[in-house]
Length: 55
Image 1 (cartoon, helix red, strand yellow):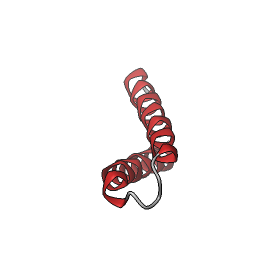
Image 2 (cartoon, rainbow, N blue to C red; image 1 turned 90 degrees about the vertical axis):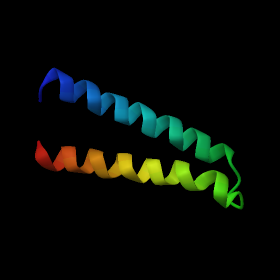
Image 3 (spheres, rainbow, N blue to C red; image 1 turned 90 degrees about the horizontal axis):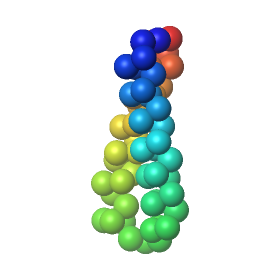
């Protein structure tokens, strides 16, 4: 894995962790507030899975 891809993966993992912390603080019934964060979290999970499959 190139240094660039390694750094990108670490940034995605950091963002994923931050999103998980934010989502843990937002009540489940605040659907609209959670929607964008959950969507971005799913995008990151998909990107990380693609990266893991490509290694």
